[in-house]
Length: 321
Picture 1: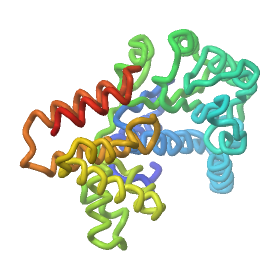
Picture 2: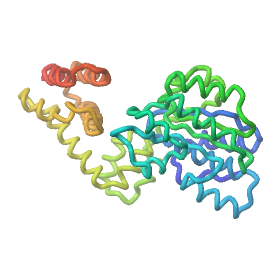
Picture 3: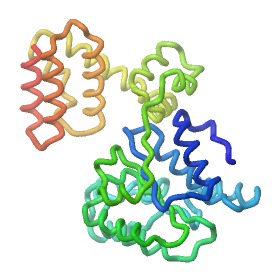
Picture 4: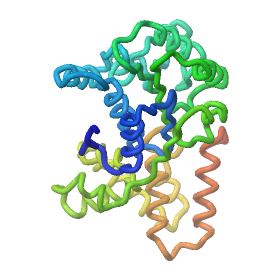
């Protein structure tokens, strides 16, 4: 039986279950890995695909398969991850690092959103009927909740009569975001947050202050630990945002509070990160009243809608004063 790789932190039960499916020749036509972001679902999906493609292969062939999977050049592996989006993500070289399904139709149609359309699934379907070289052929769809209803129904038709040896591996933040009929045809594996001692093993050489800061940000997600430990600039940016969050909760003047919240006026990664730090620092600030938590929750919910961001931010700054 294949060895559980050291590169994946946590999720031992999921590993054992997947290895057992291979060993018992009981591989499902579809798997759904669901759980919060950055837990390692995609890493697990690629590992599982690698193990399936290695079934029946000799050591030399296995080494080649490893190389081809890293480069997404294996003829029996199809991955739909990063999508071409007009004015947002148009770098084909960057897209090719995570997706190897043709997306020329998206450029032709001028796609502008991170949504998997029925045309994306049709392009995938076209590839699935080509002759494969392995016992299994694997198709990974990352963040499958991005599928439009028509795309989900098109995928469902494939799952109802899948080609022999085809294995779909879907990842999603929650199985409730996937069509129930797709869920019912899938073997579902739930991914949970990883305990801090295991995450700490990823950053043994970091100083203790950095370790604790990274673990507080990770909230049990190995992917966050990995990205921050490899990117000192990102770590510094997070420290600056934490400083803004602390200063916001300490500020007495409304003008000062609004100044600290300025990044929230625009959608984007910086705004999302500041919201995270506002939540974490509020949790650490035991002197704050429950009304502050309620106001922050309302702000988080409001910013997910099309409500006027400036009005939402101003209201929040007033309510926590």
